[in-house]
Image (cartoon, rainbow, N blue to C red; front, top):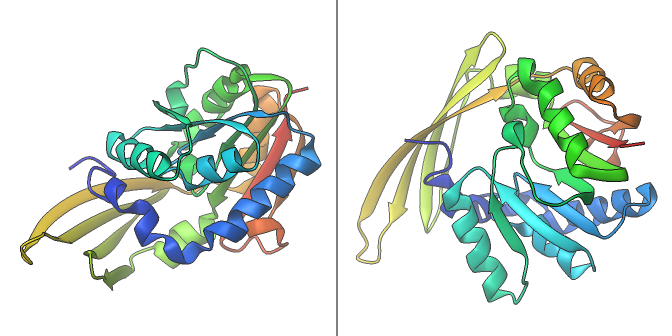
Length: 241
């Protein structure tokens, strides 16, 4: 089964412990400090939490994701919350848009799905989609997290709406993640779904080099939500000059 065909319906629900409110405030501070304009694109938007949060903060937001299931849930949540954001189906490695943006964000591992050999071309497409002076902010799970924390380990959760088992298989350049979901139906029975994900381990140095080759400047890096700790997550902020 394709990545996120099942997880896409429950992504925001299953990630409720990642402190979305604080993460959103961090994004807002990054955009403010970087002098970003108001028109933004959230790539790999998932169920659209950050897209909605940035819209409510006054930004003209569009969300984009490669998963139709993700986008269906993003549209539903936005409608329920009265947030009239546009949502587009798209792949960051093949990015094609009909507009130019003042900033682009790609948060929560979007770039870990991009193979190392496609980093430069992907960044070049993002560069082309930005206005002059535009800001690009994204993060990656560190190579340490991909190779050692995920590695060959197993994770799981038993929830009221959905339970899952998550098995990881180390690869030379990353990890393959096989997930099995048990979805509780209205009659109390459970349906079982399986899907597989492939994430790649990128070094900070390789990402910075690819950004520079794509034309980006003023590249800054840091840990999760602005901390100096890059053990598990690395943030990148740069500009199209």
